[in-house]
Amino acid sequence: MDTEEEWRGEGMERHFWPPMFLDPSYRWEEYRVGRGVKVRLLAVQDGGEGKTASCLTGQMVWPAARVLSQHIVDHPELVQARTVLELGAGTGLLGLVAAKLSPCPKKVVLTDNNMTTLDMMEANVEENFPIQTTMPPRCAHLHWGENLNKFLHDHGKFDVILGADVILWKQYIRPLFETVKKLLSQTDTATFLLCYQCRYAELKDKVYEAAKEVHLVGEEIQLEENAAFVEQEDKAKDNLHLIKFCHQFVNVCETNAVCSTS
Image (tube, rainbow, N blue to C red; front, side):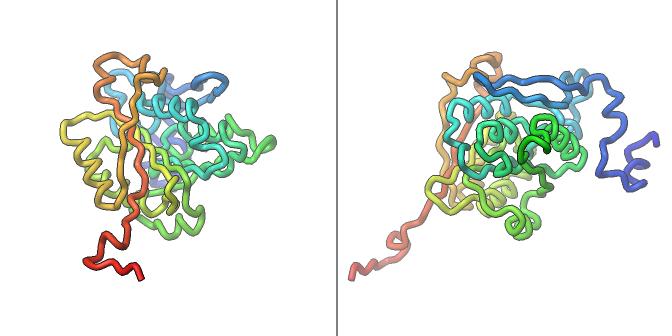
């Protein structure tokens, strides 16, 4: 089978696309996040000229994932003893780091919409959490904005949702926030952490607009003390943002013209 179409035509879409294994840029590499957190990942380590096409974006580790991973290592209470969901997980670095910090790794769910990427993610989970030694984090298919009731039935709501560089295309911003709103626990401590590289001027405004539509309020987190952020080139630092979103609970009294206190 020489083409992806032939591969998928044989019903093999749930397996790795064969040229991926033949491409030397795919290899195992160890990532160290902070002190004591190590993750081994199969990923595209060096995209090279012409290899960073959209079909490969989920198979690489991007700066935003490193920065957000560092943030949760610096603040492990964010994910410890809490249910965690990673959206657009790609290689799964974020979810795997969260699972390493959690006393119960199976409470972490890593998701992606791309089936090839999901296969890579599952391989990374098995590498870091051998089934015979622990209850590993789970992997699941999730298309933002679709079949959310079924996903909710299968996995429940989450205390923390993580996303790194998941808004490269602006048409996905609204479905992303609709998904977050549906799957985020209805508590005042529930959190959506979004780290992204701002690649066009209006992106930040669109992010906050989408959040407002689903009654989430955002607060930018300063990154000056984030070791992964400090390591970035100066030109990249200006474009990296980490935002914490929480529910904006509406006071019933504020929405009524008259509020009775009797």
